[in-house]
Length: 350
Ligand SMILES: Cc1cc2nc3c(=O)[nH]c(=O)nc-3n(C[C@H](O)[C@H](O)[C@H](O)COP(=O)(O)OP(=O)(O)OC[C@H]3O[C@@H](n4cnc5c(N)ncnc54)[C@H](O)[C@@H]3O)c2cc1C
Image (tube, rainbow, N blue to C red):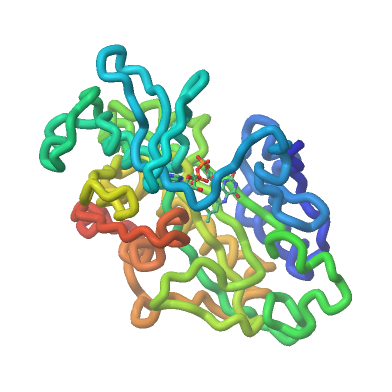
């Protein structure tokens, strides 16, 4: 069974941050997993006995044969019935399915393997010299919820408030279990933005609706998730707030770079193509800055926000662009190239 629980670790900033969030007008949600996550809530995680609990640890695999280092080159498909009958590995071994073939290679490699197996846009497959089994828009609906992280310098780091300080968790071994995070806040874009957006994006009504939650932020007692050009040392002096878009409406693509299954496909995430995504990020950034810099507890806690070098007075959207990275691609070896220029000329709103 998968365990999802919120730790009750009493980090020194937990209660001050609760007060700051409340003062900033974000309501406390005692049960964010109960159907509506709006508000701020204790961060719950999949972990058991202080260890992250991936599905492979939670479920019994004793009856499954697991082949490691076994890259699938293509799915075998019967040409006349168009039914998947098995798989072929890079080393030439083939396996016939007794019932069905499940293709679950992740968001990037799944469309790649489908295309290499002849399932994809016929024109694109032809360019790669592949025979089309089924002409489908595989790889044309990529959406990624990206994140932008802000960093805050603490006024009293000598109190052991963040990871890196010798005092942080000195007498609390549970501080080293799970993420050093107490709160996660979930927000909708403001009503005024919803009205403006509804005119701009009539086809995305359901994403704009009041009951949808567009963005979330976490407050981490460590300077995490920084782009390479803007890394802080773990000295206990900074905390950070990753802000994540929850309902990305921009759509990117995955296309083949070659017929080699080991080659990275071409990934164009097309970030910020849609105004909704830009407004969601602005909403998150505004809420974070208000909580950390304008509230009584925030002012007691925070010395200053630490923007990327040279960006002290950057307009908000430019700042988001500088701070953002993909949660997925930022932690993987995939290379992405965003060819979308809309994000460069995005509406700049303070
Ligand atoms: C940094 C980060 C943090 C996250 N945090 C959370 C979280 O807190 N909570 C949450 O619910 N989700 C989280 N997620 C999302 C979650 O990890 C994914 O949704 C989930 O792993 C997707 O599972 P999957 O099985 O579909 O794909 P994957 O986990 O991507 O698995 C695909 C597998 O297929 C293999 N594969 C690919 N191509 C081939 C091939 N040709 N032949 C053989 N094998 C192949 C890959 O090696 C991989 O092992 C996070 C993701 C990231 C990147």
